[in-house]
Length: 179
Length: 354
Image 1 (cartoon, helix red, strand yellow):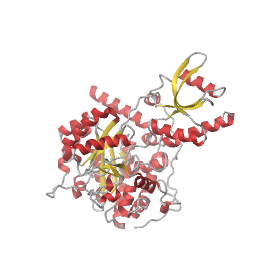
Image 2 (cartoon, chains in turn purple, blue):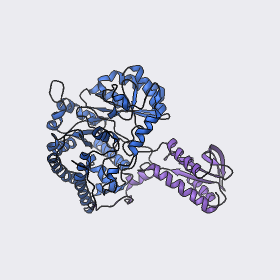
Image 3 (cartoon, chains in turn brown, cyan):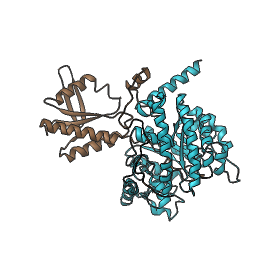
Image 4 (cartoon, chains in turn cyan, green):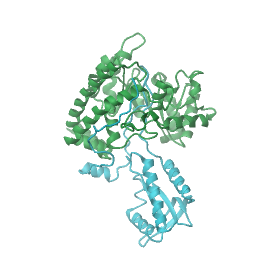
């Protein structure tokens, strides 16, 4: 037995990585429409069950971020870009038709920059489509500039998704001259 | 483990998890301490409610209707160590008197699957059982299991001949898997599914599936904290060399960081390999047990992956080109788990009313 690198390998001739199958059918529409969390079971590999006769180590869950973990990642990226955020900042956001008072997960009041982590589908009742549309418009104009971070339940690499989104948001703000 | 240690372990794990924790009972055989399990589950639910979830890994020999009812009532999902058919299973999994354990376990399988149709069967393959893998796995699916997680006994003395035998078994299983997906049977077989995902979805990354010492830790009967259950051994003085703290004194952060960094470290032997990111080299415990180092991949893993990967990719390529609906949904529809579950619920309701 030996370690041996494979130099060339071309056996995988099915789509890779970012291909996503188009969704169709009522079941898919229902799934897409916001079913609340239905965690089924650990579809993961047990960590090396090498003991014959033992029950082996516990199976491992897919790597999903808790809200605390996601916020820690987001806060870190803002700090790396020298933007201090106040946690749970009370804000009243007003738009033509309505207003919403909420505590922004992280917000810099002088820059009017921040983020709000939206936990899956449960906050759709609070952050309605009208609110989100109005917030988008404000974010392209005079602010506040608040990024709504919303992770898909089955994102496979949630940390990478969060990091990419925040980096993109910060770059956009730099492009606008806000920061 | 004493009741007092167990309760303090729960408190420790919840604090380490910043207010929540998924706690898995393991062994040995955890059901030998069923009374303690009931006590701990009651304690945790009173103290922490839904913030603490329980899982279990069991060989099933002590599972009966009472324990199954308790586990089901308290949402304690468990995985069942079941190597395959009777011949395969009883090769290694025997009682002290030398008799095989398969018959006792198999009596409970219908009730287990009725309580949770998604129960995972965990199978370990050794050189002795390699010739039986195909029949064994097929028999697990025939019994109603939908999820079979299979791994090698990496510590066994594998030879080239054994791997050739195993290769033929995988080829036979590839034909079975193809037929099953063609028929719309939703099965998960980890040697195939996980490798297909590393191409169709994303390669294995740092911390994927093995986050020892970080989000995954193990607490022994003495209350010593280890990076993973595989490091506990007999929990004696030599084993404690690999501990990262205790529930009394907390984490030894330097030691903990060492294990995390070692587990996350690049596997330099794999750098530049065309299969890097697709192989099951991520498990620090397996690497450590076989080589003494978390970052050194044992040759058996490399040989096994080089043997298996072409079989899996040829299988997946055929399924893609034949436009097998279930294959495309499983690996390319990110809502498959949800939509599949809804379909299963619908099928169950239809079965109940017809």
